[in-house]
Length: 164
Image 1: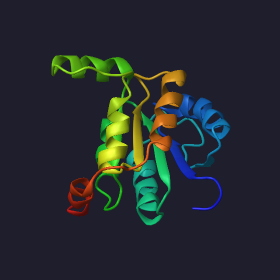
Image 2: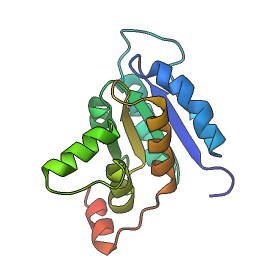
Image 3: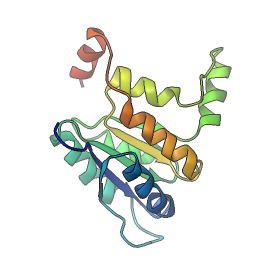
């Protein structure tokens, strides 16, 4: 893809403030940001109204990525993953990832392992951030890693992705 990589960004009421702070930080990393809303704070808005059009656009635009900031990130990822070709991953904080790995007997390099793995093995193209759990610095690093990590999975990962 020539030029800057396109990154769609969106948020509902729960991620509205963080999105406003995150946009200039992502632009400073050299990406072309396309804001897909919300454009005004609406405490009763519904994340699927933003997520589904973003997921549809990502599914049709090879090489593009999306970042959505919601409350937990979970429902937002569930909505995005209903769209064929969208592959959403959830991030709701370094500490939570590290703690989950420790419970399973593993260790985390820095708490961003889930992002790296979803890019390397699942070719995730949509990052859903739990805005109620993640601050600006952590969100910037999560997005940086998400956008910089390529899909490097062996044939078996590509084969699995093709099945859905």
